[in-house]
Image (cartoon, rainbow, N blue to C red; front, side, top):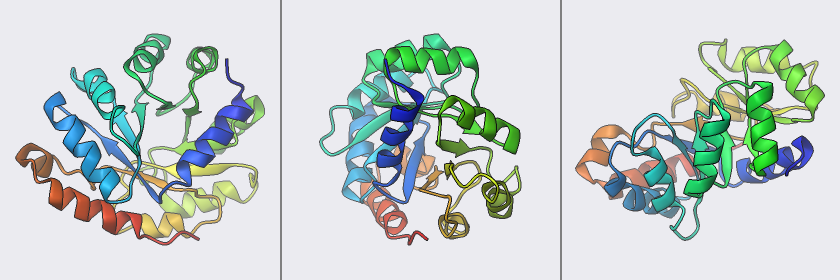
Length: 215
């Protein structure tokens, strides 16, 4: 078991490891270990593997064995997803939104969750339950950094990890906000580089992202 308060404490620690959490959609488990090694080497130790491919759980299991990395499961939608992610070795979870069933499952499994919110009402509902660290998703489609700044004004207790449309170009806009701990982004592991096994290029992208200043 884990309480929402403890989950948020663990999520904050995770989010403070680096300014960017890579959001990874991996089709081939053979790429898992070298990809994780490349990202960790570049300074991005927290890795979110989305449950969007048949290989995702195997990818989590492979990445969980990489020294220096912390691997979580993204796109958690159901209690079954939570159970599978924990069995695969995920140490944290990320969801696009939040339902009571999903929150209950993560708390019962002891899995720290970064739950998604896109509106003040959703953020307030999670805060009421005890979640003070949340994912702002989809960030750009929900109004971007100006919207998150506006939501944060009356809700100073909440810290966010904006994800969805975040890139090297606009990450600084989010990271400059006082209520942002880090951002989630997929640009640090582009599909063509992963497919080609260009791990040096991915390490370079990770290092560039890891050097982004935070407000």
